[in-house]
Length: 191
Image 1 (tube, one colour):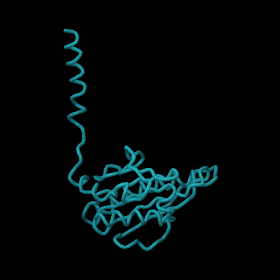
Image 2 (cartoon, one colour):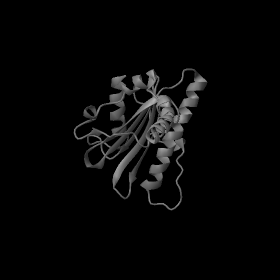
Image 3 (cartoon, one colour):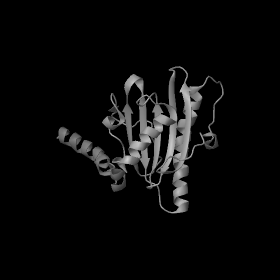
Image 4 (tube, one colour):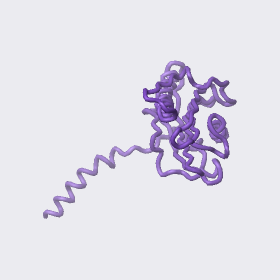
């Protein structure tokens, strides 16, 4: 009787978890096909079990995390952008907030400073957006304590979604914007 009661209580406690488990939406499933495989990235890369640190802030999308040679790390997020000028601008602002969080983190840890560094999107590397993109924000720095280059990029693809790319270290010998844009080319190629 006591075991039955405990089993019933456990079932009742677990029921809401299974009923509210999020399933991938059709949009997230389609967006996940844009993410490169570890083999596409290059030799020595493998997909990490989770995408810790990538937060699309409630936007529908897909994320991935990879580890590579010499301690390199790659975090990706592909988010569905709303249609319509106002809604799309709001989604871009949401993703810019995520980009800014990463940029602020690297600005803080990448240089020897005692004060908090606040990166303004206006301070991003001003580049012409690469082919296949409508807008781009990129910031580069060097992690002082690990002597590792890092960069954070956010791109609005011409095909609709936005892509957040965080790179620590080298991707096939490239660093910074060059490394980010090599990953971006893979994503655009999968579109």
